[in-house]
Image (cartoon, rainbow, N blue to C red; front, side, top):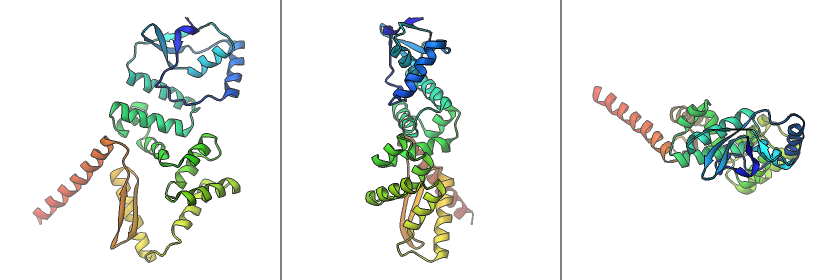
Length: 263
């Protein structure tokens, strides 16, 4: 057991906000049954920093507990952040934006790749990549997602919209009509295909090329234009991710050079 005033929050905590109603409910449960799972802490100077269990700690403080059960572990920043992320992901009580920000912070702080982060957390790389993509959303969509007005699926469906005014209009329609994710995807596709475009055959060819590149590079690829002229956008999320993509492109170039030499 530790006194509550010996424990401090962690700057590595993935949770950015706490639902007061949920905290009050948790506090009443703790009042009746106690804290069933000890809070994980690590020594920091003359205090102990929370690694996992901050909601339990905050709820305990609210109901006036002077002591709380803890498990003390000597952890470095990286391991502490991974434990905090894993616990919150298992409980599924973080918003998608909170998870995305935490993933991005982890990649920046420790200079690692999405692949390595996914492996260390026991997640698919696509799960990590799709969540980080949410950081491309404008603030209005982030707020809607944080407040559970839309889901992460809706948010990803809206990502192709680059015009801020159009984005706001479409988001309002999605909320007003309570569109499903599939309906939102269809709406966005219709809006993006209103401009004059190449023939259906050319459209299909571009889509096939885009899908092939996305599978090859394991990241989001957007092709705009026609078969004979256009722009290719390849998304990366940090320097390591950029170097990974460049490595794949270079290996493809080497393969073509070897094939040409053989012929």
